[in-house]
Length: 216
Image (cartoon, rainbow, N blue to C red; front, side):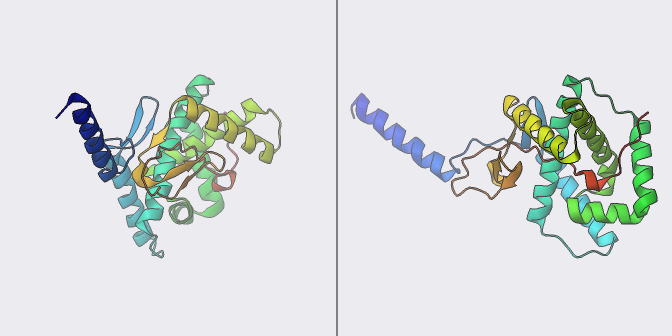
């Protein structure tokens, strides 16, 4: 076999191998990557299991594992993204602020009801409540720094644009096993047929999830 034929044969073999393994660049052991931070498969799986347990505890209708996986992955990756944003914009959220925000939410909705609604509607397990509240406070601070005194809708748009640009800069990715990223909608889309797309995941906590934070 000539050198040129060997090269063609090798190229053909590599094509078969790539197609057989899904055509996409995989993230071994990681469900998502934000810059140098990684969301491990183990962390994602543990979060999904905790959310499932919470739904059982609160006697709620089971949610599909696929939905819980998507919800938890968006939250975990977005949390890493918000951490970078907070560092860059010199935003500091104290444990006291987190505690007060949760206390306010519990006073309005009831402690168990708050945890039930977050588990059902957002896929947030009780163990992640502090992290979710901290991300909410970071998001609120970013919104105010980007558009001081702006309306809620305008600030939300500003935050989404900022996080979208930041996620692209940091080469934020999710494993194509979990879907594709729609940058316009800031949401995870369906798994691609060829599993070739890596995705950014800046989905942020909604203002309605927790009350307006108390400023220190």
